[in-house]
Every structure is written in structure tokens, then in C-alpha cells.
Amino acid sequence: MYKILRKEYLTSSICLMEVYAPRVASSARPGQFLIVKAGAKSERIPLTICDYSPQRGTVTIVTQEVGASTKYICSFEPGDSFDAVVGPLGQPSEFVYECIEDLSMKHFLFVAGGLGTAPVYPQVKYLHDLGVKVDVIIGARSSDMIIMEEQMRNVCDTLYICTDDGSKGEKGLVTDVMDSLVRSGKNYSQVVAIGPMVMMKFVTMKAAEYSIPIVVSLNTLMVDGTGMCGACRVTIAGKTKFACVDGPEFNGLDVDFDEAIRRQGMYREIERENDHKCRIGLH
Picture 1 (tube, rainbow, N blue to C red):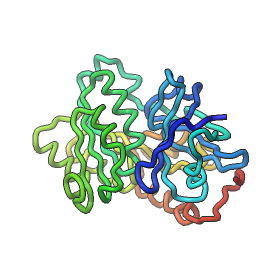
Picture 2 (cartoon, rainbow, N blue to C red):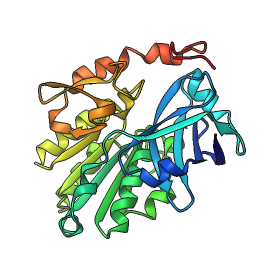
Picture 3 (spheres, rainbow, N blue to C red):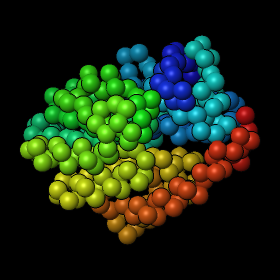
Picture 4 (cartoon, helix red, strand yellow):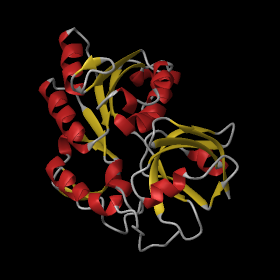
């Protein structure tokens, strides 16, 4: 059993949990995800790894209450245990395979949209621990949807915040902040964008405008997390890939975002059904 050691609500509907899962924690790398099965007959939910500590034997997950299964996960309290935590799954971020000498020459820009801040955090932390220069943009609809601000400040060189309504940071879109940074003389080697699909599409277009390589994470497409259900099929450079086994990270310029957005929309209403139960099992 996988005991919950800590629980914190980051917003009214976004919950952070630190879970004891030593084997997962010892193998986890930035960019990967895991499967949480809350009860013996619960739906299997893929969640990106927000943080991990081999020393404590813990992994940190962030869950947004959307449908019945995610609400059930968030109903657990410290001292309770999940039935299963499986992972790490998916491919690690490509930069984990680069030598420190090469990484030290780079300047990364991470663009996080809303809940995407959670999977951005371990990547930024990893690079920061190696002494790599990293700037981060966090964008959200309003101030109450900004998460992990202080944690992110502690692991990046400079943090920029923007909101659609101007309630925190700069008013505008993350692409507006990208424009401002590049035009001010920032010379980025790599952009990494994680967040809503439409945001990643336009961040990719902006990165292409400035000829900056870009990586995006298609974790929001995943349903089953093993490649068996086919829900996360996506066209990458003209070929069919699966976000959960081939990704979740891909070269943004290779992604057919319009197809990915259509596929993601297929499940939105079902996800929100209060009585939705996955055919894999019931809780």
C-alpha cells in the first residue's frame, strides 16, 4: 500500500500529495509520469510526477478535481493509502541524457500553463541543481489559479507571471511575455512548454518565429497510460505515436496540434460526468 504522507490544496480544486513509493522515487526522472489506482477497483489515473525524493522514498503528485475519479483521489487524507502507484512511466526529458558540460552552455525557458506548473517543477529543479540557467513563465486565467509560485522561485533564475485578467503579474498571454523577453535581449537555447494544448500550440508558433527549439508535453492526452487504449494517439512528424509510451514529450514543431486538440475534446464531457466510471474498474 502507498501511504499519503502530506496533503495540501494549492487552489480550491488542485490538490498536492506526497506519497510513500520508494521504488518509484528511486527510479523517477524529470518528464515521467505514474499511474495512481486509489482503490482496489478504481480507475487507473495517469499523473505526471511533480517531485520525487529517493532519500525519503516519496513521490509528489498534483491532481485537479475534474471527474469522479480525480475527486476520489483528492478525498484521501494523510495516513490513508492508495491501492497502487505504478511507475515511473514514459520517456524522461531528453536533457537528462546530455552531459553537464553541454547543459551548462544552455539557457532554458520553461512556459507553464496552469496545472502544467506541476510537471515543469521537477525539470527546472533538476537543471537548477546542475547549475544550468533557467527562466520560467507561469501563466493562468487569474491569480487564484497560480500554483507553486514560491517553490518555483527557489529553483529558477527568474520567474515571470502573467494572468489573463491581470490579477497577478503581467496582464496578457505567455506568448506576450516571450515576446518581451526575447526582444529585451534574452538568448534562449531551448523552450519547454507544458500546459493546455492550445497554449502549447501558440508557444510553439512563437518559438518557431524566433527559431528557438521547443519541446512540449502531451501528458493531458493520456487515459490508460500504457498505449493499450489508443486514446493518446497523435501525429508526430507525419507518423502515429502514443503520448504515454513514445512521450509524453515531443518536438513541438513535429506535433499536429489541431488533431491533438480534437482528440482531447472527445473525452471532455465524459470526464466531467459525476457518475462516470471507467470500464477498467469501479471504485
